[in-house]
Each structure stands twice: as structure tokens, then as C-alpha cells.
Image 1 (tube, rainbow, N blue to C red):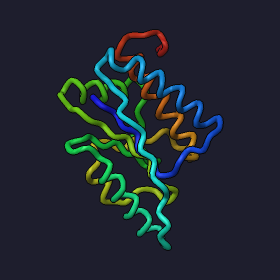
Image 2 (image 1 turned 120 degrees about the vertical axis):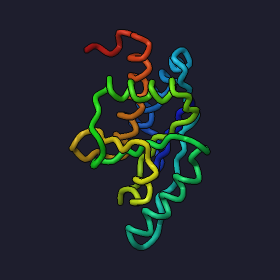
Image 3 (image 1 turned 60 degrees about the horizontal axis):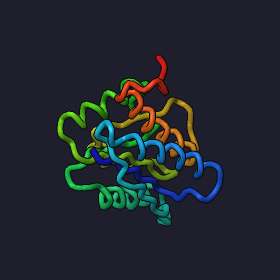
Length: 160
């Protein structure tokens, strides 16, 4: 299964980009052994529309445009479902084992996500009740993708 990370906003050079890259590189190297492949990161500029609703709508259109046909869509949103690492790995494994070919994880813009995306999403996931800067969300989800690979492969990186 190919996994794409979509983000509204670009990571600038610096420690956040380096750390996210380190976890994505680990995922790239270890994912194929368990049937997971990192397809790409898609970064788009935030909408410059004058109101939040229009910005969310425009950013949603960018997500839809980047979404591979037939792809699963996971939205990262503070109002989403809280899963632990085992459950997230298990869900990814179920999708993979069910023959799903593509999965996109989407990080929305500062205004949040357009309501229409929630209806399209296969999962809305939160990373806790705290509010996180988008740069840190990118690191957290990159690490969780790598952790999912280690869980699915039985590697000791994840200790219960």
C-alpha cells in the first residue's frame, strides 16, 4: 500500500524538517518489508482567501486534487478519533490486507478542514486533545508511520 502525506503549508529548512525527514526515511527503508511504501509528501501553500470558509474550501479542493483515485483518506483533526499506536498500526494493516492500494494522511491549514472532507474521510484521527503546530504534527505522524511498520513487523522499537 502506498502512503502519501499531504500538508497545507510548507516545512522550512530546520530541525522540524530534519526530524520529520529522519522518520520518513526510516519508513521508506523498512516499510516495503510489510507491504507499505512511502509514495510522497505533497505540500501546498495555504489559501489566501479573505475568509476561513473559503480558505477551507480551497484547501479541500487541493486535497481532493492530490488524492489518488480510490485512495483512503485519513484526516488529522483535533476532533477526530484517538487511537493508540497499536490500533493505528492495526488499522493500516487491515486496510493493506484488504487490498487497499493508496492511503493519504492529510494535515489541513490553520483554519481547519472543510466539512465536506469529513464525509469523504475513511478516518478522522486526532493526536491528542492538545493543539499542535503543523510542523510538529508532521513529525508526529511521520514517527507514527515508522512505528506502525515496526509494530506490523514485530520489531522491538515499539515496546508495550
